[in-house]
Amino acid sequence: QVHLAESGGGSVQPGGSLSLSCAAETASALKAMGWYRQAPGKQRQLVAGISSGGSASYADFVKGRFTISRDNAKKTTYLEMNNLKFEDTAVYYCYADALRRYWGQGTQVTVSS
Image (cartoon, rainbow, N blue to C red; front, side):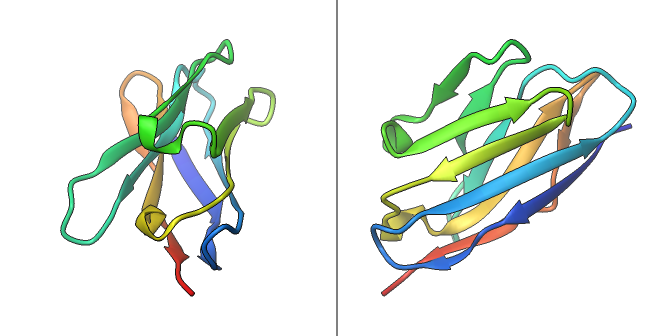
């Protein structure tokens, strides 16, 4: 069993920055971790993922602006979001892969002026 606890998020003006973190409570070894997001009326979309070895991948729409990282000892993944845009507004969900995929509860990110 894996319980994911997200923190961070909130409201920011365009061009601003926010950081998200997602800590896993589990005795299991974790494989990939990452983040999806879902805006109102839209499908959930992959934002970024990172392997247990630290290899990161990003959706095109966040490349150069978002950075994903992880601390395996803390079983935590982080998402640093810079130069935020209106269209980044969404609920952000972290995930962690063990025997199956587990999801966090989601955290709201709002970009508005």
